Length: 140
Image (cartoon, rainbow, N blue to C red; front, side, top):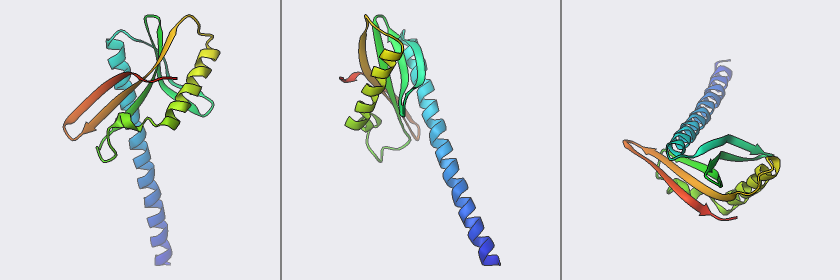
Protein backbone atom coordinates (compact mmCIF):
# COMPACT_ATOMS: atom_id res chain seq x y z
CA UNK A 1 0.00 0.00 0.00
CA UNK A 2 2.79 2.45 0.87
CA UNK A 3 4.48 1.80 -2.49
CA UNK A 4 1.22 2.75 -4.25
CA UNK A 5 0.92 5.95 -2.22
CA UNK A 6 4.56 6.78 -2.90
CA UNK A 7 4.05 6.32 -6.64
CA UNK A 8 0.90 8.48 -6.55
CA UNK A 9 2.73 11.26 -4.65
CA UNK A 10 5.66 11.14 -7.08
CA UNK A 11 3.34 11.32 -10.11
CA UNK A 12 1.27 14.16 -8.72
CA UNK A 13 4.20 16.20 -7.45
CA UNK A 14 5.88 15.82 -10.85
CA UNK A 15 2.70 17.05 -12.55
CA UNK A 16 2.47 19.99 -10.15
CA UNK A 17 6.12 20.95 -10.68
CA UNK A 18 5.69 20.78 -14.47
CA UNK A 19 2.51 22.84 -14.21
CA UNK A 20 4.29 25.48 -12.11
CA UNK A 21 7.18 25.62 -14.55
CA UNK A 22 4.77 26.13 -17.45
CA UNK A 23 2.90 28.78 -15.46
CA UNK A 24 6.18 30.57 -14.64
CA UNK A 25 7.20 30.50 -18.33
CA UNK A 26 3.82 31.91 -19.31
CA UNK A 27 4.02 34.72 -16.72
CA UNK A 28 7.59 35.55 -17.79
CA UNK A 29 6.41 35.72 -21.40
CA UNK A 30 3.52 37.98 -20.38
CA UNK A 31 5.96 40.19 -18.46
CA UNK A 32 8.13 40.47 -21.58
CA UNK A 33 5.14 41.32 -23.80
CA UNK A 34 3.96 44.00 -21.34
CA UNK A 35 7.43 45.55 -21.19
CA UNK A 36 7.68 45.45 -24.98
CA UNK A 37 4.28 47.14 -25.35
CA UNK A 38 5.25 49.87 -22.85
CA UNK A 39 8.58 50.35 -24.61
CA UNK A 40 6.86 50.76 -27.99
CA UNK A 41 4.20 53.11 -26.61
CA UNK A 42 6.97 55.29 -25.16
CA UNK A 43 8.48 55.44 -28.66
CA UNK A 44 5.16 56.66 -30.10
CA UNK A 45 3.66 53.38 -31.30
CA UNK A 46 -0.05 52.74 -30.91
CA UNK A 47 -0.80 49.19 -29.73
CA UNK A 48 -3.66 47.88 -31.88
CA UNK A 49 -3.75 44.26 -30.66
CA UNK A 50 -2.07 41.99 -28.15
CA UNK A 51 -1.84 38.26 -28.78
CA UNK A 52 -3.68 38.45 -32.10
CA UNK A 53 -4.85 34.96 -33.10
CA UNK A 54 -5.30 33.79 -36.67
CA UNK A 55 -6.19 30.13 -36.56
CA UNK A 56 -3.42 28.51 -34.50
CA UNK A 57 -0.96 31.27 -35.31
CA UNK A 58 -0.32 34.26 -33.07
CA UNK A 59 1.25 37.69 -33.31
CA UNK A 60 2.36 39.02 -29.94
CA UNK A 61 1.78 42.70 -30.72
CA UNK A 62 0.22 44.53 -33.64
CA UNK A 63 1.16 48.22 -33.61
CA UNK A 64 0.94 51.32 -35.71
CA UNK A 65 3.46 54.10 -36.07
CA UNK A 66 2.60 56.82 -38.55
CA UNK A 67 1.52 55.02 -41.74
CA UNK A 68 3.10 51.65 -40.87
CA UNK A 69 1.47 48.59 -39.32
CA UNK A 70 4.12 46.72 -37.33
CA UNK A 71 3.79 43.04 -36.44
CA UNK A 72 5.98 42.32 -33.41
CA UNK A 73 7.29 39.00 -32.14
CA UNK A 74 8.52 39.15 -28.53
CA UNK A 75 11.11 36.63 -27.36
CA UNK A 76 12.13 36.35 -23.71
CA UNK A 77 15.04 34.56 -22.07
CA UNK A 78 16.13 33.88 -18.51
CA UNK A 79 19.28 32.11 -19.64
CA UNK A 80 21.79 32.44 -22.46
CA UNK A 81 21.98 28.66 -22.73
CA UNK A 82 20.16 28.64 -26.09
CA UNK A 83 21.64 31.82 -27.58
CA UNK A 84 20.17 35.26 -28.01
CA UNK A 85 16.35 35.36 -27.92
CA UNK A 86 16.08 37.13 -31.29
CA UNK A 87 17.78 34.13 -32.92
CA UNK A 88 14.79 31.98 -31.95
CA UNK A 89 12.63 33.54 -34.66
CA UNK A 90 13.20 30.71 -37.11
CA UNK A 91 12.18 30.56 -40.76
CA UNK A 92 9.16 28.46 -39.73
CA UNK A 93 8.15 31.07 -37.13
CA UNK A 94 8.58 33.84 -39.69
CA UNK A 95 6.30 31.96 -42.09
CA UNK A 96 3.65 31.63 -39.35
CA UNK A 97 3.92 35.34 -38.53
CA UNK A 98 3.55 36.27 -42.19
CA UNK A 99 0.45 34.07 -42.50
CA UNK A 100 -1.07 35.59 -39.36
CA UNK A 101 -0.23 39.11 -40.60
CA UNK A 102 -1.98 38.39 -43.91
CA UNK A 103 -4.99 37.24 -41.89
CA UNK A 104 -4.92 40.42 -39.83
CA UNK A 105 -4.73 42.59 -42.95
CA UNK A 106 -7.69 40.79 -44.55
CA UNK A 107 -9.76 40.62 -41.37
CA UNK A 108 -9.30 44.32 -40.61
CA UNK A 109 -9.46 45.40 -44.27
CA UNK A 110 -6.22 47.34 -43.90
CA UNK A 111 -5.05 49.23 -46.97
CA UNK A 112 -2.89 52.20 -47.81
CA UNK A 113 -0.30 51.32 -45.15
CA UNK A 114 3.21 50.00 -45.10
CA UNK A 115 3.89 46.83 -43.14
CA UNK A 116 6.90 45.46 -41.36
CA UNK A 117 7.97 42.72 -38.97
CA UNK A 118 9.93 43.60 -35.83
CA UNK A 119 11.39 41.44 -33.09
CA UNK A 120 11.81 42.51 -29.49
CA UNK A 121 14.26 40.43 -27.47
CA UNK A 122 13.97 40.64 -23.71
CA UNK A 123 16.42 38.91 -21.41
CA UNK A 124 16.67 38.90 -17.65
CA UNK A 125 19.69 36.87 -16.63
CA UNK A 126 20.64 37.39 -12.99
CA UNK A 127 21.09 41.18 -12.65
CA UNK A 128 21.50 41.80 -16.38
CA UNK A 129 18.26 43.02 -17.98
CA UNK A 130 18.11 43.83 -21.68
CA UNK A 131 15.42 44.80 -24.15
CA UNK A 132 16.48 45.08 -27.80
CA UNK A 133 14.23 46.22 -30.63
CA UNK A 134 15.03 44.90 -34.10
CA UNK A 135 13.08 46.90 -36.67
CA UNK A 136 12.44 45.19 -40.01
CA UNK A 137 13.88 41.98 -38.55
CA UNK A 138 12.70 40.01 -41.60
CA UNK A 139 10.69 40.56 -44.76
CA UNK A 140 7.60 38.93 -46.22
